[in-house]
Length: 218
Ligand code: AP5
Ligand code: MG
Ligand code: ZN
Image 1 (cartoon, rainbow, N blue to C red):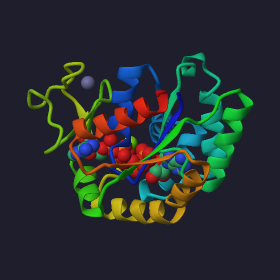
Image 2: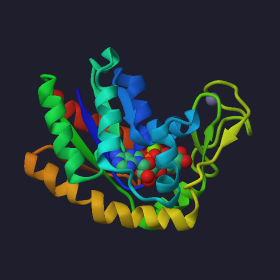
Image 3: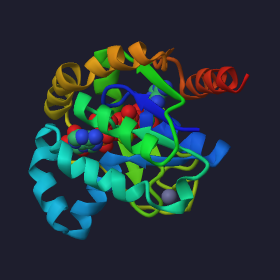
């Protein structure tokens, strides 16, 4: 099954994509994570993307589409993909439709996660990630069981993203509203759109996603 999690920065796309991956064997495909990995590896794409990401703008469609096309060639996507943070423009959405069609696959659902702006800013400014395994946490909403120790891997080093400050989050929100929000109507037109309340707590949001999946299977 191929799903898109569509929502603004901090909506909980990464959090839920990881949960769905664990529960169903889908692969999370986060273009944000892939671009951050390219930055860390110091590749040409990563170096070009750095300044754009730090100010909250979108990396160009051709660069993003190239990394997605490459990722979709790997055999581990056979059970399905949870697209997290992709597509973000109408051109990306149209290209994804073509890529899936070319591989004899299709999109099963687009889940729009609705969260209000002030909650998004709070979520983003409190977010941190385990440096070793990438597990996500929040200062207030998703603390590890033991302070300073990752629940998943026992690691004790954490990182915060350079674009996770209030100024950049507000810029990212504007970019979302202008360039990505039009995809809601695009997918509604395809009959693939499911809207869920992303303001609920993490477990309730997962339950709402599972209800959509059950409806698709029925
Ligand atoms: P990307 O990494 O995709 O960032 P984003 O879309 O801004 O989304 P976030 O990762 O910030 O939020 P999320 O929805 O994953 O929330 P999370 O689950 O972590 O992109 C970064 C940049 O890369 C872009 O700005 C752009 O430059 C570039 N880029 C990426 N893809 C691109 C593309 N396709 N085209 C062009 N450029 C691209 O949750 C946030 C926090 O809230 C966490 O701490 C979590 O614990 C907490 N939380 C989650 N759910 C809940 C809940 N229900 N209640 C309370 N807290 C919660
Ligand atoms: Mg994310
Ligand atoms: Zn960890």
